[in-house]
Image (cartoon, rainbow, N blue to C red; front, side, top):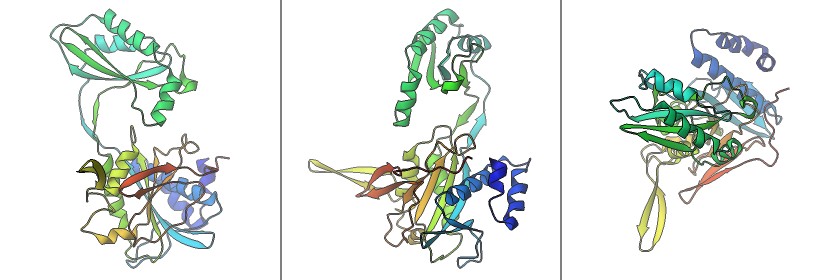
Length: 337
């Protein structure tokens, strides 16, 4: 699929895509190139005419794509972001406890764990395994997946004995990976500290690209590809529209936004140049046909309105509240065949 998609940009652009895909020194370079290929293919799907690195804008720089669709034109600039890792720590659990957790029969779930408190004496492994086994056996993986897609948190379980306390989270295995008796139970070790940097990362990405090209005189979309362990729409909402706050006026609460979002910042009216932000969580060859791009529309009245492609879901702000993303009536993904 990647080889085929590399053949679709104009001939003069193909060497650049090839060299970045083969960059053995930079994973970011590889993934950002895959993100651009995905966007290019997604634009071709509904019949857009796509120009590569057009000479537009007042700063003499070239954005990624100039798109023509049903008589309208707009510009897309791609940026790849990845969740940052904190300082690496050694595994805090004794090897015996790690082996005990990995020995729990779990055909339908992986588990992640967090050591909340460690005691001075090794706890009984038999009771730990028995408690985990009962908990995991009580869960339905398909139900957990369906609930997670509706923004319900993954199920968790606290195990305590003596002075020990561990918190476990159940991560459903995909249907094709269930039932393997040789598969380990631990899916995520706390070997690295994941930072909750979602809003800052999205906000920083849009800021870097939003003012890069000056005045384009065309609708402008920043397309943010996100590598995130557990992506949350609320992070993007906060980054773009600001933190949601509730004000109590008599008995009727009203809602507003803090001026800490890209479009709600009171100190920089130039942010109206960005008409929308297109996001896809964890885009990769194995998820390209599953995840719908979401176009977050600018609430700034000075922003130029951008066309909405039939492959995009949309989200917007109305009276300080976000209207949840609504999907297209007929979703056409990038062409996998």
